[in-house]
Image 1: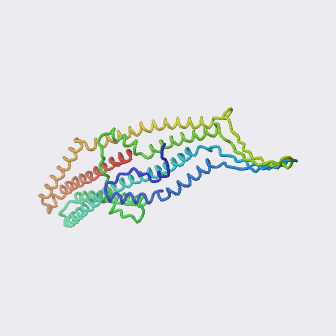
Image 2: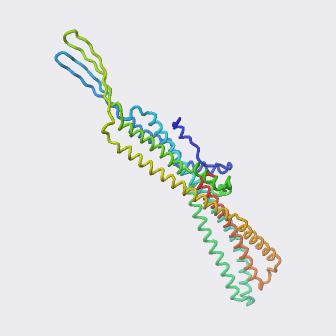
Image 3: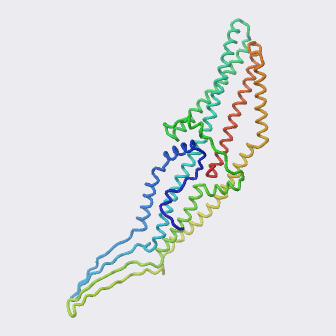
Length: 396
């Protein structure tokens, strides 16, 4: 570990910014995370580490008087980690890096959640607008049918069927509005009540992934994921802690003792001296270092398992995304879209003034509306898959 310092406080977040609008969303996320407290909380942790390891200095004044000599000694006790300053500096820098990665992980997850919620919000807005338009048309048709019903020119059964269709659309509309309100509330909790959700919804669209090779994406995940990098930092921290524990149980200098004495009789000679105490490792208890070794071995096993699971999740999500964008799926969606357009053309050629055709017209419009709603759902599903994979690899 070379050149570790408080510069870790300035480590970049693993977020790839696509454009200025995304930067705006990112800045909101950062302002509402624990980033503003990052420096302060890091300093608290580092101060605690210094107090624990750099402490231990003590001094004793040891006067001595006999019938012919007066003397004074100052015994200076050194901390158990004395002479291990480089390792302590490394440990403190690792604390800063670990804290930074925690904040980065929090911000990345919040950013991905914001992308998901905005994807849902766009879908709900468009679906609501579509159903509102269709319900207005159906209400007009229902009003015409009601006038004819009053004149006994329209079947009560057909009128009831129209009412049932309108009721279905109004129920679906109310469900969408409730989900829209819930999504807006979740976004306000995440971004704050002052956030312009409608403006952000227009730009908070996830960028496409930079690579289409799952193995490259797996390597990016291992490089970018803050939680995985944090485990590696923890492993380095355990190595440093083990070295510090060995310094406490190994050969070390316990204290220094400069002293001065003066004789009353004889030649009245002044005497100066320096003594020291060394602790030998023989018979020392090495359980501390064994604990660190066991923890380090356990952490390496956890890192290995985490690496395998990350690779597995990336492959699963990549496969799901590939299937959703495959030619087969695209052909089916395109066929449905073309059929819907054809039905719209047929609808435009029909005589909408004759109530006898109203039932058939309503069925056609309902099928077209269902296709449009499904198209909006497919778009949102694709965005969610992209976001899930981006969250897994730590970047777009």
